[in-house]
Length: 165
Image (cartoon, rainbow, N blue to C red):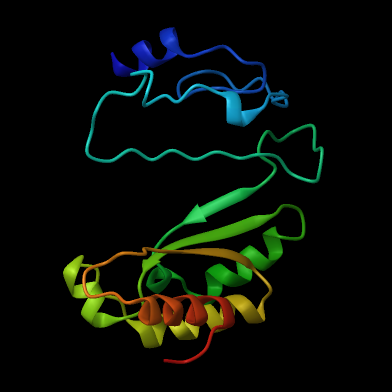
């Protein structure tokens, strides 16, 4: 029912499709900054969590792909070397981006969000990802309890420069 409400009230813009609609493989030629907010316009009902992803284009113009990028999300600790080998092979024909939600590298901050991480394993896997030149995005949260600007900067340093903690 919610899906039907969203589809019925969503602006029909060429190149933009919604969950449950057929992707017509069109390029969106619109100013994304002028699109109405689905939250402010009550297109999305209140809920605890909503996952909303957007793509704003790609330097390529492949006729078979709308997004022209494959994004895979998981916890870093779940990655195995064999999987990375497959990503390297896939990157010969597509662009794969691995997305990780680390939140923070500090165990004292991880405790507050019930998100423990095995930083030694994460460090090893990040090294393997960087060595294979696989694109990745690591999400961090700023403003966690007990977090300082220095601790947040250290988290940034670890994921961007892959320094050891």
